[in-house]
Length: 79
Image (tube, rainbow, N blue to C red; front, side, top):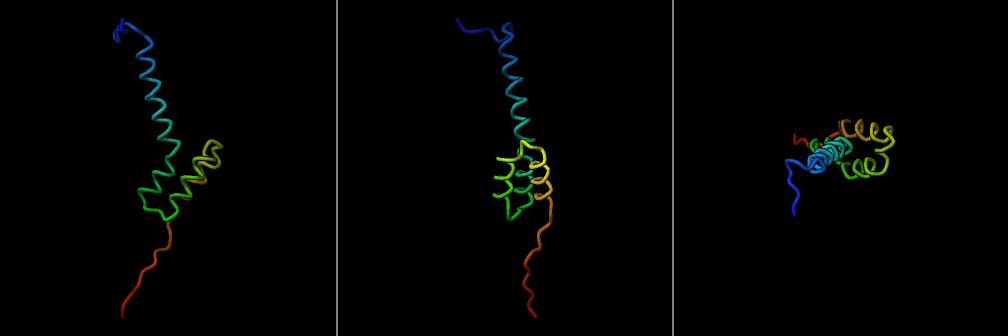
């Protein structure tokens, strides 16, 4: 028989665990999300840095700071 979600404690635990995992992934990749939203030209490099060094916290902070650093924009002016 199937499990009754109202009485089986493992089902709510699994749902909570999945929600916690999703939130942790969002926080882990926050530097990349910031870079994408800010249209950072180095968003791929920020993603790679976050992916491989984000777990070190120092790598995560470096990626987050890098995502927030403004880049010089090339503008062409006509006279």
